Every structure is written in C-alpha cells, then in structure tokens.
Amino acid sequence: MAGHACHFPPWDRVYAFFRRWRNHNLVREFHDRLRRLVRERAGRDSEPGAGVIDSQSVKANASSALTAAASTAAS
Image (cartoon, rainbow, N blue to C red; front, side, top):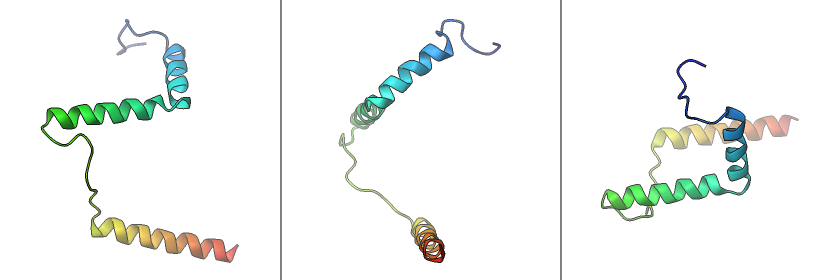
C-alpha cells in the first residue's frame, strides 16, 4: 500500500496488539505514563491539579442534558 512504511507488521497483527492492550486497560496506562512524563519534562507537576470548563461547554452540556431528559420523558 502506498504511503505506508514497509517496516510495519501487517495491520491485523498491529490491531491484535492494540485490542489486547485496550482490553487489559494498557492503552490508558500508556497514556497516563506518557502524560506524566511530558508534564515532568515541562517542569510541571506530574498530575494535573485542576480542569478548566468554559461557559460554552457548560451551556452545551446543560442543554444536552435537558434534551436527553425531555426525550426520555416523552418515551
């Protein structure tokens, strides 16, 4: 297939590894370890201390919840 590196194994083998890692929660573990490493190298605390929610996100989630509740009640 054009554009793909020839040194990669066949896609089905790669996907089998991914699926196994995902089923054993290793994808989350890899992500968490990588996030900690990147944050430490940037001179930050390894774990995020707070999240930020902007007002648009809050409005969207509130209206989505109301829409979901209304459709459930109508069922």
